[in-house]
Length: 205
Image (cartoon, rainbow, N blue to C red; front, top):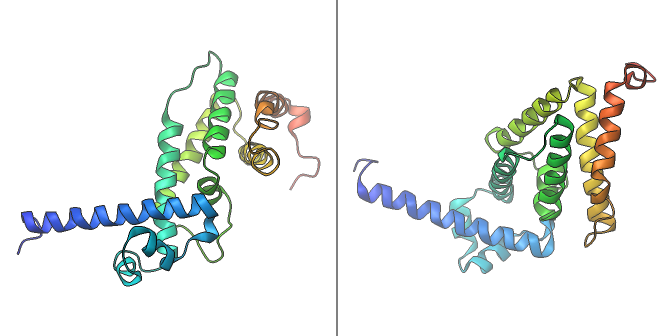
C-alpha cells in the first residue's frame, strides 16, 4: 500500500493526534508538579492508556522532554516574532524585555525547560533547539538596532533578562518586584554598552 494512500494518511494523523494528547497530558503533569513530576507510568494513567503504548510514541522520558522543548521553543519564537510598539530602539528593547519576562513567568516549567538546565542527562535535539537559536539571532538583531553588537554584551543581555526572571519567580511569584525593574535595568544596560569607557572589561580576556 502506498504511503500516500488515504489509509496511510489516516494512520499518520491518528499517530500525530495520539502524540499531541500525550504531550498535553505531560504539560499538565509538569505544570502541576514541576518537571521532575513527569513519569511514564503517571503520564499513561493521565492519558488513559498504558505505559507500553506511551513507548510506542516516545522512546524514552527524554524523548518526551525533547518534544515538550520543541513545543516550548516554537511558542517562544511565535511570541518573539510579534511586533512591539516603540518609537526608538531603546523603547523596543524595553518592550521585548517585558514580553520575555511575561512569557517566562506565565509558565514556570516551560521557562525552566527552555532556559535552565534542570533535567539531568537531557539535551534537546538540534531540531527542537532550532527555534531557540533563531530567537537568540533575533535578540542580536534588536540589540544591533540599538547600536549594541559586542558578543559579551549579548551575553550580558541574556544574563540580565533571565536574572530578573529568576528573581521574580523565586522570590515574588505572584507580584512584580523584579518585573517592574525592567525599564530601569534596560536603560542601565544600554547606557553601559554605549559608553566606551564603561563598556571595556575591567579584566580583558
